[in-house]
Length: 253
Image (cartoon, rainbow, N blue to C red; front, top):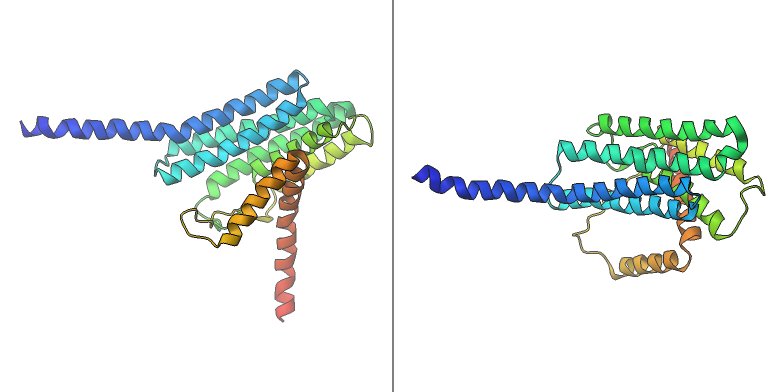
């Protein structure tokens, strides 16, 4: 009798937990769909939609981790699923989109930047999964794959929005150099700030709210150029910090 009366609430709790666990994985699935959509749009030569889809995938990828932490629904399955989704969204999709847009105009040479980027993203994700308990939580080891994808997709979106022809101004070579930079920086040991120390539950000064609102206004005013410049700054910030850290001991001496 007692056994029967206690089993029913326990069963309901298990069902509720399984339902909550689906929540972050829904965001991961949506990000995966956005990454696949970017590839399909690139094949149809709708490159602006492909670039936007990569940014959508980046936002959804940020949300799935936040939701998992806020609802305490982190799981080994979720971590592996997120990593596989990231490889599609921020590894294969940006490489294929850039190749279809500009790199294929370089002939066989165009394969190299796309391949370096794709392999760099795979190695970056594999290293992140194996070093997750070792590295400093405040910094990423190498450029994060979402930021690398945003750097590449942001350049494409900026060029299309400003109607810059792919065949002029050496655009295929600029695209190749940028893609190579993103791919190599992903597997470097350069530290990039993770911003994981930001606590959304902690109270902040009113000036911080104003800065956030100003940031949103700037992004809305001209998304392609603002987002591209933002990720260019982040893509260079790791090297700036690394050089400053290298020089700091000499200054102290």
